[in-house]
Length: 426
Ligand SMILES: *[C@@H]1O[C@H](CO)[C@@H](O)[C@H](O)[C@H]1NC(C)=O
Ligand SMILES: *[C@@H]1O[C@H](CO)[C@@H](O)[C@H](O)[C@H]1NC(C)=O
Ligand SMILES: *[C@@H]1O[C@H](CO)[C@@H](O)[C@H](O)[C@H]1NC(C)=O
Ligand SMILES: *[C@@H]1O[C@H](CO)[C@@H](O)[C@H](O)[C@H]1NC(C)=O
Ligand SMILES: *[C@@H]1O[C@H](CO)[C@@H](O)[C@H](O)[C@H]1NC(C)=O
Image 1: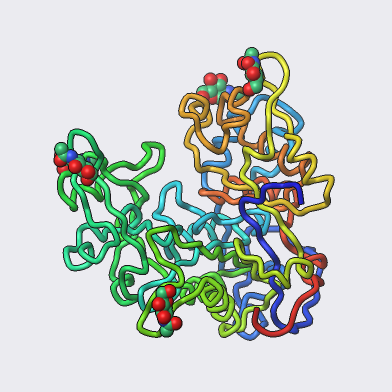
Image 2: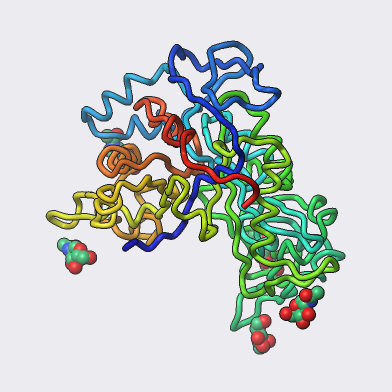
C-alpha cells in the first residue's frame, strides 16, 4: 500500500455470529425505543421509532449552518433543521465525542456524544500497573488529563516526577496509567486536557493551559472508565451504537514488555486482553472496530478502513490558494476503494483562527479556511468527493447533523456485517 496509514482500523470479526442487516427504514423522529430485543444488547439493527430517548444536537450545528454562504449545500442542510435527527455511525465520538467541553475518555463525554447522535464511541485503551485496561488517550497523559498532581500519594509514583518551572524550562511531569493500580486510577478525577507551564507547585500544574475555545464548565471531576465499563456504557445507549477501541502503543517511558508481578506484559497480550474484554461481554464482533493493531493474519481478512487525519485528505489550489480540493492522497485512497475515516473535526476552535494558529488538522489547506461556516463545506467535500465513511469529532452533533441530513450510515450494513471473520480470539 502506498499510503502512510496514521490510524488503521480493521473490522475484527472474531466470533462466528451470523448477523443480518435490515434496511434503515421507517425512522422519522428523534425518538428511539430503548427497549431492544437482543438479550439486553444494543441490536445490530438500527433503532426503531419509539419513546424514551431523544437525540439532541443542541445549538452548534445551527450556528455553523447560519454562518454558511448561500449554496445548494446550505439549503440542503437547512431542510433538516427540524429533523428527523438520527443516530449515525458516520459520526464517531472522539474520546467520547464531547471533548470540546467535557473531559475526554469519561462517562460524561460518552453520554454527551451518544446524546448528540454518535453511532460509534471511542475508547483509547491503556493499562494499569496491575494490568487492567482503562480508557485514556495515552498511556502517559495522567498529568494533563487527571488531577493526579493534586494527590501527593499518587504523584510520587509518576514515571517522571513533577519538576517546577524555572527560568529556562517549563514545569513538567510524566504520569502513566501503568504507574498506578486500577484502584488508584479509579479514584482520579478526569479533567480538561492541559497543564500550567509556569507551575512551581504540583497543584498549580493541574490549573489552566486549556485552549480558551474549550470550556471548564464541565471540568468538575469527570468519571474515568475501565474498558469493561466503557463497553457496558456504550452498549447501554439506546439505538445502534458501535465501538472503536484504540490500543495505545506505550511511549518510551514505559518499558515493553512491561514487568509486572504476573510476568512480562507484551504488546500482543495487551491486544488479546482488549479483544477478550469484548468477547467476554458478548459483544458482536461486527460492532467492534479496533484501531492501531493489525495482526498479520488478519490483514487480508477483514474490512480494511484507513483513518488518515483531515490534512492528508485536502489541499488548496487557485488564486491565493483559497480553493479547497481533495489532495492526491484523498483521490488515491478513494480510487483504491479503501474505506476512509477522517479525524478530527471540532478539535481546532474557531476556523477563523486555524491558519494563524498553524493548527495541525488544517495545515495543508488553512489558506482556504476563513470562517466557521466552512465547517460543513469541508465535511461535505470529505464525504461526497472523497467518500469518507465516518468522521471522528470532539463535538459529535456537528458531524451527526451532517450525516443524518445526508442519510449517511457510516460503517453500517451488509458490507460490514458480511465481512469475512476469523473464529476464536485474535
Ligand atoms: C460568518 O462569520 C464571520 C465571522 O467569523 C463573518 O465575518 C461572516 O460574515 C459570517 N458569514 C455569514 C455568511 O454569515
Ligand atoms: C530548570 O529545570 C530544568 C528541568 O527540570 C532543569 O534541568 C534545570 O537544571 C533547571 N534550571 C535551574 C537553573 O534550576
Ligand atoms: C500557574 O502556576 C503559577 C506558579 O505556580 C501560578 O502563580 C499561577 O497562578 C498558575 N496559573 C493558574 C491558571 O492557576
Ligand atoms: C521479563 O523481562 C526481563 C527483561 O526483558 C527479563 O530479564 C526477565 O527474565 C523476564 N521475566 C520473565 C518472567 O519472563
Ligand atoms: C500556495 O501554496 C504553495 C504551496 O504551499 C506556495 O508555494 C505558494 O506560495 C502559495 N501561494 C500563495 C499565493 O500563497
